[in-house]
Amino acid sequence: MPCAAATLWRAAGPGVALRLLGQAEVRPDFVSPAEEAALARELEPQLRRRHYQFDHWDGAIHGFRETEKSHWSAECQQILERVRAAALPPNIPHLGPVHVLDLDKNGYIKPHVDSVKFCGCTIAGLSLLSASVMRLVSEENPEDWLDMLLPPCSLYILRGPARYNFTHQILRDEDSFFNGQRVPRKRRISLICRSLPLPP
Ligand code: OGA
Ligand code: MN
Image (cartoon, rainbow, N blue to C red; front, side, top):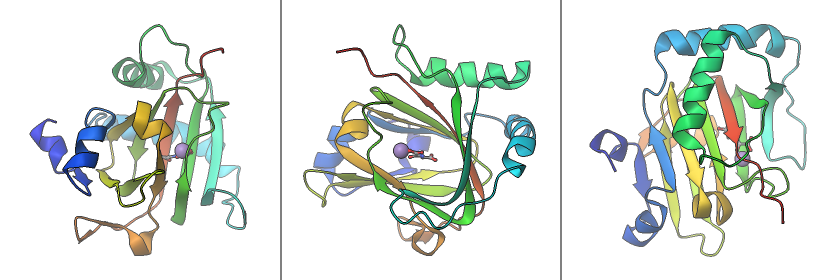
């Protein structure tokens, strides 16, 4: 784990840290503030047409609007290629459209595991606009957890066990602390790239 990233990663203990090392990763400053602005600018017209949804009683996500985007400007396409090259395993098909999730400042994501029907072994997300805390909790033993601080402009990657055997969530503003430090949650946009499940 590079030193800069170690300050973004906090595990319940050495056992869970060893299990998740290299499987759950944060790369700060993966995009520049100018690239972040370009992505946000390009997404804004498409997002603005939708309303934030708050009342989904059974859904994992609250206070959000979302879209899928396949066509990007050359500048943004290049950034997304960089994400895929850095995060997704080579020679494995990935979902073409990018999943864009816009969380209101009061929005949050409850613990869940992405459906194995739609998503393969790797999930990679760019976090824009606001810092947030992503918490992973072992499905086997809830005392095994990992918190990752996701600064704006960072990329996170969940692979293998981090993707299949741990739930992930984005903490709501009231609960948004990392290592005892408050991490105010403002509006946050994430761009999520996923590998596809392999055929049986
Ligand atoms: C999801 C999810 C995380 C994020 O949409 O399944 O977990 O970074 N999103 O927005
Ligand atoms: Mn998810």
